[in-house]
Length: 134
Image (cartoon, rainbow, N blue to C red; front, side, top):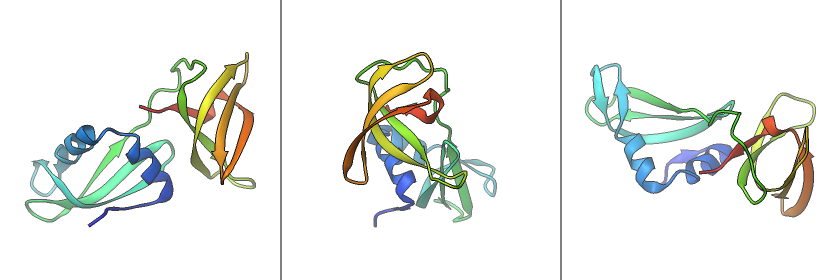
């Protein structure tokens, strides 16, 4: 059975290599067992820049979760880097991830190219809205 993810969480989960995904799922703290366990029947959501997995302990079937924090913001970007652009939704504080490629850097902005709902767009965005993939 395929795990249920929000669209944003699905994008972030897919950027993690499968062997690391397995390690993450087998390295979860269960507060009920007071021990490390494996997470099953998991779902995923994005909170801020973090991917949060919710699931069940393989031993006691109690609720467990795992937070995967985004990378530090001071990562230096280079042209050609694959990034996640945290695009702000107009009129609110909500963002959603869009895959993009860095084209150039200026003093205050980063020029990116992305597929935004089926349309290839070029945008100048603040570096704080980008997260390097992989």
